[in-house]
Image (cartoon, rainbow, N blue to C red):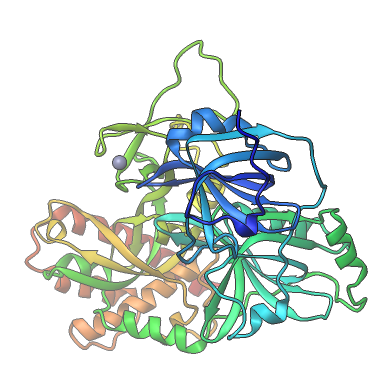
Length: 526
Ligand SMILES: [Zn+2]
């Protein structure tokens, strides 16, 4: 029998042969899924000299090898292939990446060291534009000195949490850091519960990003590993060397959007004609209209959310649990996607709000899709469901944040489609929502005592405001009469709707107007 090969240093392994034998610690492992490779197990391995290498177990070897993969344990690995490490997310600075093959053998071996083999990057080297290679992931250790409010972003059609924070090192150098998804949530919780304690973040496999010459770090999808207030010797030493003068950890106030950003959005809105609801009914071109309306009701004939298949972005349906089946913890719920014609666990709940809206000229229905709904509700559908992905049983039992929409006034861009013009559908699709606080640029409020706050619950003030607004806009479209008050709106409406065949739309207008007028009069009395 041939003598066993000596252990090679990780620094020496190269692609020219496969007969390598190494003794390594698994310092980090994660699973990865891509359409091309399917599910793989990824690892970061370290040898006793501290050299790190990225290694992959492909689907084909998973059954045989996966059981040997435990983070923190030592293994002997024999026979594997190596390939050049390329791409924008190179996990280590090793020039090569390992792949297990059919003849790979992994065996257990007693631990050789407690070291976690960090490859910590100096903040200054991260910040320097000519510094570290952005394509190679790094380990970052820092004290969180400030954090922003949690935000949500639409990333590849999946609503994802995003948390921006600032780290400092022992030289008091500052480095901006963005965390996404579960990383953002873990950090958010730690910061919220920190009290007067320091929050120390250890982010392994962090990605260096560069934006307009400013460099920052973020987690690299699920590859990264975040440990908060870890007690490794390296972390304790870091804490001991921190300058003592850090300010208490505080949440940063949300910065107001840049004026020019707001201006841009306003300019965009101004490109489209401003309409009232009655004006919308008469609009006979396919296109977009700019409109201010108050949400009157949530149509509970429809569910307020649907499950979106992440593959085709169409509706998927929950597959009911098999009766008497023991619910396994962590077992993924399955959904049927009629478009992909397959069962899938990969779905996300999304808003699809059917709302009744009104202004002083009429009422109609708007359909508000996920992103816009989230903007006006303030949380994602996923967060609102809190993991309860069962079908709705009582449609009137709406979550409070959705109920709270009733009575609120928003400016929308709505799409006027063919189905709206030929009246086969009376629901308009909302294209974008405007939360800008400058409604008063759009209308002149005749009574200067009228509050302009758009975010109260349904109140006479808002209706009055919508009324004022409508008489302004109809000026642009209709006859130039200067008579203020709601009376005019009725006149305008009848002008607007001349020649329109739908009576159902018209029929609803006077009654609503009547109510508003009544309330207006009462306001006047006060
Ligand atoms: Zn699908």
